[in-house]
Image (cartoon, rainbow, N blue to C red; front, side, top):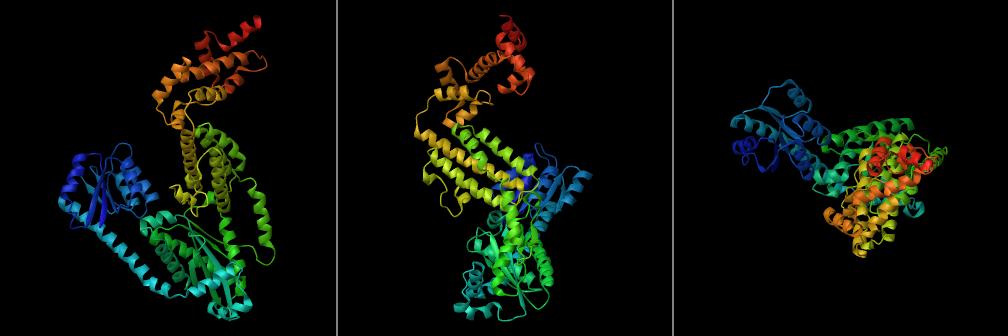
Length: 558
């Protein structure tokens, strides 16, 4: 059964399409509606939709803008364009976005159902191809001995004992002196999204599909055996075996075949991967070093330049000490990519209930990383692990109960209700902000539960932070009280509104600072939180009926 979304700002047209469409005959189980492009995108994010019928002329986000977003974020989604105009720009965008059909208003029953049937036929053909591909290969994978996987894992983990386990080596072709081996590490960047949308949240099925594509394509040149990494669900490991040939041959062909694998996974299932290719070796026990080289290749990929996946070979020789030198270089670089130095400031902001300031500090840090022109996947992994540990420690110290935190969890982000997918620096940055928001919420709830509210806390905060951009909403969020109630309490206690009191503190401080002739008015303006000197001067005049310069002159005369 299929789900169809109608996007048009005219309700009568949406109703007409509902009436004219042969939904039952087309096996459409649900017809959804949105009045503009933004509403449609929210529905797309909320759940699977198979076909979208979109009007080209709408408020908020028109059809051209909507199709551009769909083309970027939902490349497999089928679309039908509806328009009252046979406009060249509309038609050109429709062709560029590969829409199934282009219907002109007014819509009639025959044209509508022909376009719908064409779309449903395409969907059925696509599902059939995917199902046949997976079913054809599941049988093959099910017959692969688990023992072979265990042998490779023990070699990779360097726990394989040659003397006691020598009998198992022929199982992986290690008894043939002409065989050469290379380890492959594949990391699925958008695993949670793809697993949910294409594999019904079945991780094993996703692993089957990816492994089978890898084995089938690599099988053109190698004997390939692949399996999921039991310690990291995003990783698929493979060992390629080639009989005879030169070291350079296996290096060239393995890199070429893995590029084909990455392309096929994107085309078949919409999966984005990065793949590390290890150096080849003649001794099967050196597969461990090849695996480490493949992991290092992925870790060294630059997230700032990652566009739709990447395949990289371990370019450093495993026998000349090059890996060691590269590790040293990475250690030197890693000192500049750390979040530890900002955690004290972030803690102070969260403790004060100022989430916006904490986000600002984090934003400045990510901006600096981006400006450095290199931020690797290894950096992102290390910073993420460090970030969650430090936030857990901070939250505990600020009174959050341990059971409210993802401490000791195998998948901590999943425990927070967050997806750990990221395939670009921008999506990684958004994930860091989402994690910060989660901990901010837990800290606010803990503070609210652990102690009674005192309106004097707001006054004390203003007294200490008058130079910041203070908003009533930050106090409302921190104490879980309405803006109106907070303002009423504050005025009743201190005879000033919250904004009035902020102004009073700033103006009192301004008089004090103007007494120091060494300070320029521009400097005083910035110290008080005003970004514009003229705005500060205007505020001062409104408050004291004379400008800062006039006040300073009068004070000096006295």
